[in-house]
Length: 314
Length: 314
Image (tube, rainbow over all chains, first blue to last red; front, side, top):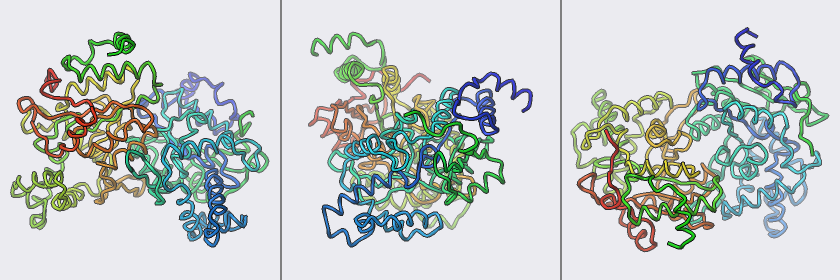
């Protein structure tokens, strides 16, 4: 560490980030924040975080997939004719191989099954108002348990990452979530879980429509906020370039690369899922991102090595 | 005024809003704010404002039309082959009738000329990065003079409306702009002119694309943020329902109607352009909105009657 930076770091409170072990990853974060506080005006201290697999657990299935598949199951129960079509068929028959396979195939570049699933999932809340949807989403997130972790979904956020968001906020950063998942789904709990208000959640969305004074869901996709869509949506929402970006998968690469906007050297964090004991160990869908982090000296955050705990107290 | 409301109003500082005459319009605003402060939590005190004709002058042409037509003129000069096509032809030949007619026809429901103009205008900044565009837009707004008002565009905001935005902010409201004009155009000056930061400007946009680490303009329209698109975009950006909405034209009707989200009684303001002396007198494109304001007892703000001054000091 250069002496000037050491002095700046000395000025920050290093008792923060208690769930981070005293490793190089933590040190680089603390250094970056100290330098930003000294040299970058608060309005430009923008940080963006992917959500699934970066801020909370995305295995064995993304949280929203559980939410949507339960609804698909209810619809298949209510309307037997639907059961001849995917994904209603797979849900009704508990065909986890087809369901899990669709996402694995997506990461391998084959979107055929995912498209079929998405077309079904998009119908799940057609005609629902944004307010009814928010009520249902929040209810699910607060009450339903994660299938492996023995806690409600709303408590499956990574404790070190929520500490990082607080730490950044305390140092004048404004944090946003840029999720590939549903914006209006995550918004319902983002303030409680991360201290990030609804208007700072950017993400995927079905097309919404204004009908007679109410805003309702259609069955069409508006934006799938992943890959190259992420930096575009981040700009569209914020109008500034983030100086810190955190992700965990290939779909986060454009967001990570675009950070800094070519003007400033940003901090790029990649969460590595290498902790089979406390969470899940996997690299599927993250191989390119991991290679980029190594080649370009991003901060690769090892869940096993860099975090003293993964989840918060129950 | 009910006694309880009178007491609440007494608690607010009525020396605010100095450019508003002591009329019913001003009184209803002050009452609404007092009641909101007493009963609505700050996170739900959301206000949205249309921009062209509501916050700043839109005559004789919308500000951004001047910006784009100058660029079209430059392109027509540089590439003579373009001059056989609209809008290059009209700009090169100074055919103001065609140019002004396109917008009047739009308000009358005929979009043929507007589409032709838009297709040309969309090409104006194709391939430009968002940062280059921001630089050009800001430069134009700060330096170019309004053709009739004798002041740069950046000083054509209505003083009573900027006072209203400050007044609301002082009472815990968060104000957003929802403009039918270009989001990335207005953003460059929204903080300086209105005290509204870039991330609280919602508006129309060309489709942006991520190319090699940079975000660039394409020649395709992403969203024309007018009419029923406004409440949808407002929800998409904010995730809450505004309780105060202000507009001036038919394109603001869905935004005005959707305010309150069916949960709360909102304040709906409609700026009436009835001041030929200090600004422009016109109702084209606003007839339905004016009728709705009368029928539904919205606050119709008469520029001639309710404002002691229209523009700020030079």
